[in-house]
Length: 331
Image (cartoon, rainbow, N blue to C red):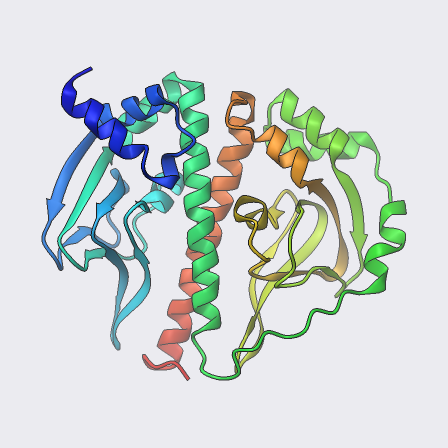
């Protein structure tokens, strides 16, 4: 252990994204990281390039920028303590936009291949890394959803929450058999422990077409996985009304962001078409199963990271689509 990597490991302990890492895990990150300084207006991760690096911003800021015929569209900002390149690292796709330094920046660059090799060798380190990536992607997705809401000028007041009485009535009487639950989780190639816990401790619910699973702005104490049917995830856009963000089907998870940051739901969810059957997974079950010390939950963590990356790409794509339709102007 050399002095420079020891100092870098201590520096990493100051950032929330790696606060759950132990000393050895931070030392492992430091051993594969390279410190870099970039001047302002430098493209660190060009749009379309393959994901070869995962970057921690130490000082300064980046803007995530997509170039269009109407000029640049800023999709977000990456600040000290934030990860850059996390979406591509998870899904293996090219960067969705340029990452441009807004000031002189200092970063720790982690080689993606080296990082993957370390996670393959050390399951505890892999669990810690996936937790960091899940938190990072979920935080960016929440910000992206907020940016969608701010695209249109108008009344910024959210719609009132209207909780249907049906939500607290017959829902708890609905039952599906254990084999159906287990089949769902086996399809996702989860570990035996994950399958047993999720099958045993989840609560089945049935929602008819158009019925609300949860409202935007609610506090969340459960996440959900779809057994059958389709769920519409939507957001109230001031000046535009309720806007569909995505449609989810069998095996998709939703509602997990509120369990990570304990913030209100950033979007609403309702049953689509012929209704939906879901399994509700309480917060304490999620916290126990995805405990940072439970390396047996790696498969579920990878699945949740992949879904967060997909939804972040979808939200950024929707914002880009609106920007192009408005000829580069918000309305």
